[in-house]
Each structure stands twice: as C-alpha cells, then as structure tokens.
Image 1 (tube, rainbow, N blue to C red):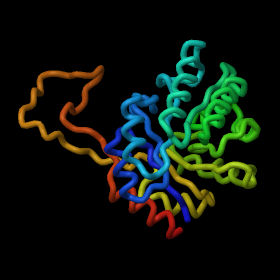
Image 2 (cartoon, helix red, strand yellow; image 1 turned 90 degrees about the vertical axis):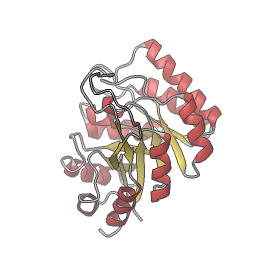
Image 3 (spheres, one colour; image 1 turned 120 degrees about the vertical axis):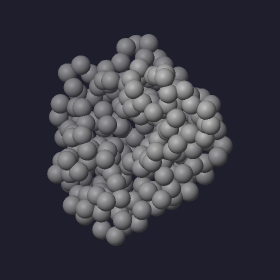
Image 4 (cartoon, rainbow, N blue to C red; image 1 turned 180 degrees about the horizontal axis):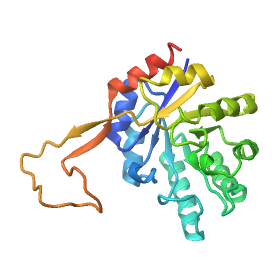
Length: 248
C-alpha cells in the first residue's frame, strides 16, 4: 500500500485529511512561505480531534534554513511543546551556510523528540543541500525516520529521477517520501517510475467565505489576494490520490 501524508494548513484541513484516508498529517502554518510552526492552540486542538498520526512542522520562519541562536532556541522550545502535547512526531531540518546539513543542531532536535517518544521527518531543506547523496547519509546517521523530498526540484515529478536514485541508495535504511506538486493526475506515474511508498501533498481546493458583507476596497496582507476565500485540503482529492497511487 502507498501511504499519503497531508500537509495541513489548518485543523479543518487536518480533519479533511483524516476523513479522506491519509495516514498522517503534517500540521503547519503559512504555506505561502513554505510552512512555519503552527500555534500551540492549533497543535492542542488537532491532537484532541485527530485519530491519525500528527506530526508538527518545526520551522520558525520562511526563507532559508540557516537559523540564528535565538531561532534555534525557539525550535527547541517548540519540540518540547510537541512532546507535552502528545504529538506523534516532528518535521524539521537545519542547514549550514555552505549548504551541508547542520548535524549538530539537527541531532539536538531529534534527540529531544525521541526522548519524548516522537518520530522525526527531515523536510525539504534536504532539497536545498549542496549534495543530496551525502545529505542522505547524514540524515540516516542522525536517526530520522524519513526524508521528504522533491528530488531537488520545484516538484516531485521534475525531480523523479533523483527520488528514484535516493530510494535505491537508501536501500531500506530510511523512508523516502515524495512531495511537492502531487496530484490525483500525476501520482500513479510518479509511484510507478520511482518506486516510492509514501507521498505528501496539500491537496487543497478554494473555499469561499460565508460572509454576507464584503469590503473589496482593502488589502489585509502584504500582497493582493482574495480576502474572502481560503485554501483547504479537499476530502475527495485526498481519496483520489490514495486510490490512484495504489493503482500503479
């Protein structure tokens, strides 16, 4: 069976993932910035309502994966909260300025998680490394369960050759999970070509606001967007990805 993890930008999305048959949720915020750590309230309520596994993104901001001492201290505090909240795992990754993995800091995060009984996924900071095959060995050495990767490209389809090679080199020592741009249309071909056993996606659809009054003369964010619509994981898209992935 091919399993699906859903990257959920809200509790609503997380529940849709569960209803659609996903095995795990990666709960995060600010997907437009590549994802950041969700609030304690979101984590607590998600843990209360979800019966499937709940992993939480540990990332203090968007942009690169080179963090200051204060940012790293925040990440440690967030891991501790996830342990206290009863989460199943964390999703994280830190790089050095030269594009190699910061093994010292990543090891501190994963050890803290493991001491609390949590698993750990190394996220797409992996795709920003200067050498993905060396990074593979580093992540395995640190004890992560899996790597989320698009094969160093913008989408998993574009990076499918690298994903296939990573699975070969991993040799069962770690799970390789393909993510970015996964849809019900392309998932079967991706699974067939790469041999990947885990896939990851947001699988969202636009949902219009229930507001009866709208002020269309104002922008609340830093760029133009629809203030009366949100993107939410769609149950049918989740189901279709799982169904099509397992047809391959």
